Image 1 (tube, rainbow, N blue to C red):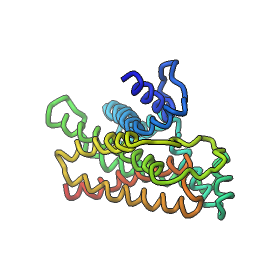
Image 2: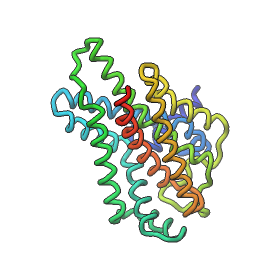
Image 3: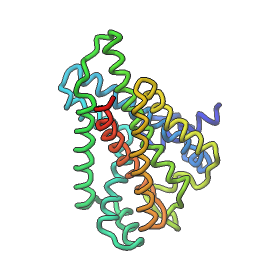
Image 4: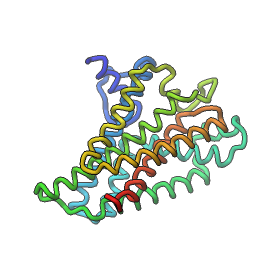
Length: 270
């Protein structure tokens, strides 16, 4: 149990800005095993985002509460995944060879493709979250309204955990692209076992399965999420022969938005 806690805190320290015990460090062995808890980090980020949304909605409009929840998720992760998404937009938008794409993604500056990509990404995320939460009533802790907010809480957590599962699953199926391992972020998992694969899928799918107890149609949201994951991984493989940390961050962001959009579309039939 102590070892598993160390592995979990390693994941939390690597993927978030949340303070961890001082004895936790980026030990390569623990970092490899930490991939099993990547979706659990989604539980934390999604949960914090919901708490901010919940209390902000008590005071402000729904739109402002959504923006504040988005800001909270960015602060918790240090814009880790958003930065990867911007770098992928710049790299694949401005590069035509593997070497050029990797060189552009290694640059910490954000170019036109990255800036435009982030604006469009945030617009889609904002609009989809507003539609999903627009009919929420501010709860007085009555069971009927409380149940609605439990559902939205699960939606937040599921979006973050499922999108992180989609991202980390690329590590299990593809090779790291940078042969010399020169990158702003080193490979997440150079070695992994069935425990990492099982753990990632278990923690990644669990919130969705709980949410599907009341609305089984939500399970269909997995299809577009993993379709996008498949095409993104195929696209990365075609151009750079694998993935980088930036590619995983971009996959997480895209799949999170795809999940929101899928739920918006499915909600008409629920």
